[in-house]
Amino acid sequence: VLTEKPIAMRAAEIDDLITLRDASSLLVAEAYMIVHHPQWHYAKELYDSGVIGTLWSVDSVFSYNNAADRGNIRNRPETGGGSLPDIGVYTFGSARYVTGEDPTEILSADIKWENNVDVWSHIRASFPSFRFSSTTSMRLAPRQEVTFHGDKGYIKLTTPFNAQVFSQAEVTLWRDDMTTETKRFPADNHYVFQFENFRNSVLTGAPYPCPLEFSQGTQRMIDMSFAKAASD
Image 1: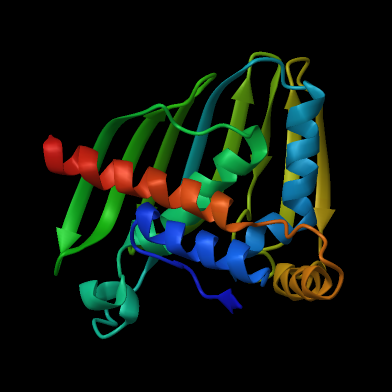
Image 2 (image 1 turned 120 degrees about the vertical axis):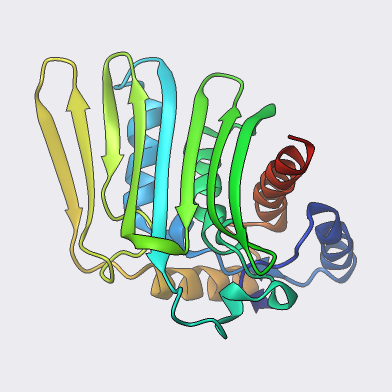
């Protein structure tokens, strides 16, 4: 079973799915497409190579404006609406995917609410080896960008989440000697790769690139963010 995200509204709810998956030996996963896109594989390869040196910060932005569509499921609390459940999974999950780390603390959670859903959220978090900043919104002009900033360079993705829809997928490496290198992905479709990977895992038993444990880790970070906002 491949489900639309979010697969659950709380991290603890995914425990039952993991138990059922393991007991049945059947595959269930969240349709989280970005980890299937080769631009993210390339970004992770660059990071793992150490070319940007010591990572200090990850800055991520994802926004669109659906204010005129009040009936949209993203604007309704009863259907799991809000910018963090809808697109925070990408700003949060992409940092986790590339670095392999999980947050130790949510430093701040500045959230604006409408109709009991978050329509703008700015989250700052501490990871074991870097600081993280995310802005997500359903009330701002469309924008998306992710930067991994180290002491010897940085990696920037200018269409990290909606490749071929927002713009062409590109990953640029900036080095501290002011040289740059850009790799473009003009035709890759992460939805196709996602389906093919799921099919392959079902037929062969190969590990699926986005297991429930990964989805649970991202949902846990969302839970931590809402808890921080409620406590401030």
